[in-house]
Length: 236
Image (cartoon, rainbow, N blue to C red; front, side, top):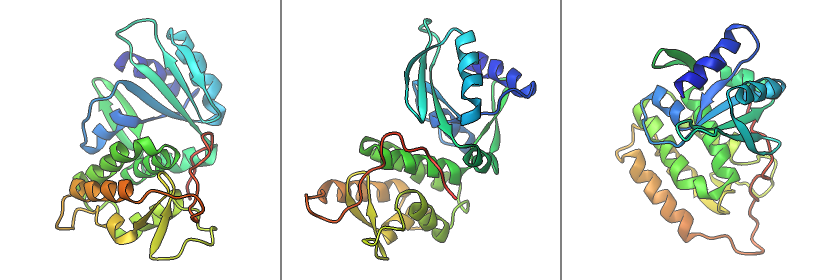
């Protein structure tokens, strides 16, 4: 990974590319270390040709692409797989604001802030219910390891912006209609993820997951649907 990031960083220094490290490796910048099998980058849409060209020059081959991401593999078994997420330029600028410098060996690169990473994970969870447990626990642990980054009001606002479409008439505070598994979630449960609660964030997540598994959506109920698979991440 280090050699690839250094190769991309040379393009950054030449003013040809801007990117952020996201995914599992980016969590390390905020104190959370977990095993990951690939490397995830985020770029603005105008930089898609640039990073694609650089990856191909590094020997990578694209194996899948949608409107919002691409997946890359290298012939060498020693090279990490690469996922590249695409966002609009204005979203990239917002993610760049407050981003953190992170050193991997001799290479320095930028990773999104805890609120931005949480927003990205909420988007992923909303798009794919199978990510609920893993990404939910990542958010909880980020908040535990970085106390004071998000207060309860800010966390609630984040859920409203990313996970719930406020324009839906069926959304009535203090309950939110949550899309990944078509379930209701109490706001107090969400905000108890914060470290100042008596329970550990992971325990709150366990409770939440149990609630989600127990409250399945039934046809005819007024629930709000998951994101379309190709809906690009954005937030205000």
